Image (cartoon, rainbow, N blue to C red; front, side):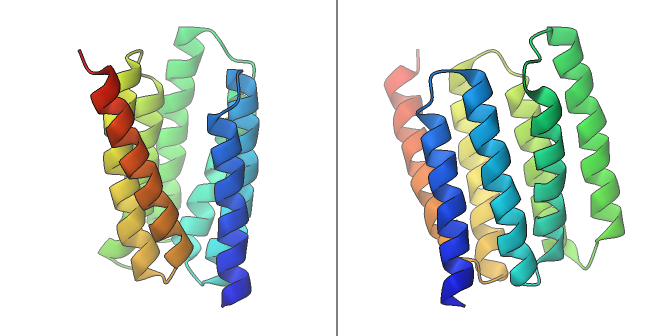
Amino acid sequence: MVVIQLIGLVAFFFLLFGFWAKSKNTILVMHLIANLIYSVHYFLLDAYMGSAICVVVVISDFFLINKTDKKKIKRHGIIFSMFFLIVGMLNFTGYLSLIPVVGAIFTMYLLLKDDANEVRLGMVFASLMWIVYGLAVKSYVVAITESILSISNTIAYNKYKK
């Protein structure tokens, strides 16, 4: 169990490094790597919905790299939101398994926003969803790291709110 939690911690560090990157492409690459690792982490915890959603996020990030056209990005968001729904239907095991689906669709929607502060505030709610899911599937490292991200985004939101 400790090894599985350490795998989740490695994924968190990729996310963290990505947040500090200068370019959007580097952020996406780090996010892609983190979600690839998270998919393994969730799979080892028998949290198949979380694992499957992370795989779809990896594919989404791969196709988002180097995309700058707003219409193509919006189309991408709609298409991958549909993929999240399909994965959700195929892996449904109860209401708890819907949390990653809703979190992924909500995050995809946030990434289409122009206002960084709206994204920050929205990510607090997305983090709260992953905290609940993490605790439910015994991914304690995800619950802790998403708590840190939630607090960080709340501080940043308050710092930059108009």
